[in-house]
Length: 365
Image: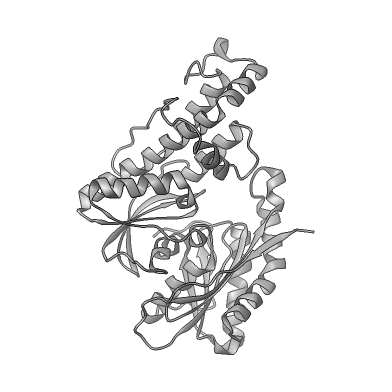
């Protein structure tokens, strides 16, 4: 039996001025089943069921994720309505994550939302998952002014987005290979941490010296990112027990020496790896801010919960005279509240979907 952890939260009012609109939102893009109720831009409930079964496999297993969504979605939606004090008949529109994500997981949420829309005769709103991460910065006060820049960082995506309005965004740069979150998790695996290991790197980095070990920064043109080379450099460095970032068969240390090197330098390794990933992200973000001359700067996505990134981002804001914004922790990881706030703005644009809409594992902006 899959054991799930269900959490809820309620938040301060959103500064809404339009007629009362209530939206039920569903998020199921990966391994978290979430439902939220939003009224006039205020999040009344945000319920999430987390799947713990993936830990023993060292990563998300798509088939298990979609099965768990089928088990979780009814109780999660029911709990979200109860926390908000709503019944289905009180809802004005149904929103769901259409893309991107794991196709099986997306299908569970999209089919459930479409069924509700048909049964209740309510408008259906399809939401782009990464655009929702950006608009998570509009849930709580203070909020950025338009236009603003947002660095979205997660296990599957790393992007810099120019947000001109709640419904108009432009992708300025993205990773050409791996995402920042994947770099954290794969590095954690090399260090011997269980999945998900990114938060453990953050934990150990707090007591380490970020300048102890130096990892190369990729020279990628324009505002794009790359993390595959960094991951390879970290792999060789650990295999060589700290002697080289380059693969040399004769330099590969024994497994015993590799483990000893990691154990004796764990905190410094975590701090050094984290500092390099964060510097790659913020150097590109600074470049984007200079090129666009925008001062309202945000971060979002699961990796924005990383304390090293949050602290360095705020420090960059002070140095560069930015107005910085970071969503609350519960809105950084995948959640339905960000789907709800995005749907709220789409509702007033009458950006509705019909029942022929389909989920997509990949989608452009």
